[in-house]
Image 1: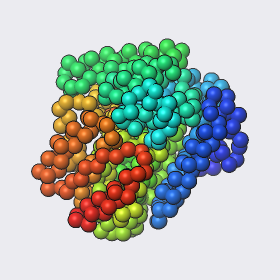
Image 2: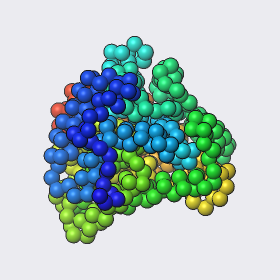
Image 3: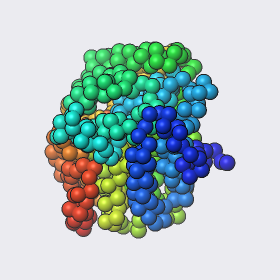
Image 4: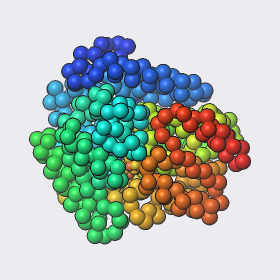
Amino acid sequence: MSDNTNETTTAAEYDFHPMWESLGMDVPAHDMLLGAVGQMFGDVFLAQENRPASTDYLNQVVAGIHSGRIKEMLDKKASGEAKKIVGSFCLYVPEEIVIAAGGIPVGLCSGADWATDKVEEHLPRATCPLIKSFAGFKLGSVCPYIESSDLVIGENTCDGKKKAYEFMATQVNMYTVDIPNVHNAQTLELWKGEVRKLAERVEQETGQKITAESLKAAIKLANDKRRALQRLSATRAADPAPISGLDSLLTVQAAFMDDAERLTGAINAMADECEQRAADGVGVAPKGAKRILYTGTPMAVPNWKLFNIIEKAGGVVVGEEACTGSRYYKDLVDESGETVDEMLDAIAERYFGINCAIFTPNDGRIEDIVRMARELNADGIIDCSLQFCTLYEMESFTVEKAAEQAGIPFMHITTDYANEDAGQLTTRIEAFLEML
Ligand code: BJ8
């Protein structure tokens, strides 16, 4: 098998039910969930025309997402190669720290409604679907990532998340990181202190000290993944776009769960192919298809609704200013540090540049949106908030003003994980694409 092949086993090749049972999962309910996601993946991804051949890796990631990848992580723990599995919900939690302490980092954000009745016994009805989803996945016992996490790291970002973590702490072993809401020299120092506290907490959980050597290697591993994603992203400036927004989104979603080294190889192979396609004028959509920059709330697996609607309507998403997009890979950690202290500072500085809407003001995000729209030759910007996300809803007015000033057509959407508004969204998006 080549380096870029996902060697995790799929559910078609092996019976994973005993593994899911051993994790305490609701196996029949989980079978239903997997069936529904598999069907959706076929309808959304496999139905695309002219995908780069190298995206087959993504098909394999999805095929093994709740099965082979979980087994692989559990096997690594059993053999001692990894000490613990550490889940998190936010881009502000540095994966380098988890890796350097011998852990496997996994993203736990969830993109589908589940066990909503149970969730609403603990959280208000008017809560963002992303929060309800991770609570529902836990209460419904259908997420093998949550069930196999030895430690779950939350963060004080939006009000909904930080209060929901109080409830989650009654369900899982939790630690919450404090994130400042303002960018300045003092808050950067506070944040550096939080990063150190987090490193100590993770070391305590894994029983493995972070060394200069392990941290340097972890920084390099995460940076290599980011460099590969940067390469892939740059190819999307071409017209026709060599890869769809859907596959680009899935690549970043996969990065929250898959083995970092293997995935980096696969992304570089995708970048090689897309560079060639761009040079040859081969695209996933016809030349001249309307090009959209997405910005807004993150889109967790399997929330592919909006990108699917945009691309089925004849548009092509050429960039994502979002945590499931450029914020994940645009900045590298400085690799020149030699001591653990220097490297933890470099990590803190890099993560402090993530332009989450919890920050006020959040000028960096606005600048990134306009810069990306220009660099990627976007015809229009679609800004989307998940329902009840006050932060991104409020910030959409600033984004709209900036788009207007830059002369870039803009559209704001508020949606959730349900399909009820799909028809109405399609009509609005078709009209927007037509006027571009
Ligand atoms: S760094 S964007 S991953 S907090 S959509 S749950 S904000 S109510 S996800 Fe996020 Fe970290 Fe920020 Fe990124 Fe709350 Fe809004 Fe829901 Fe959200």
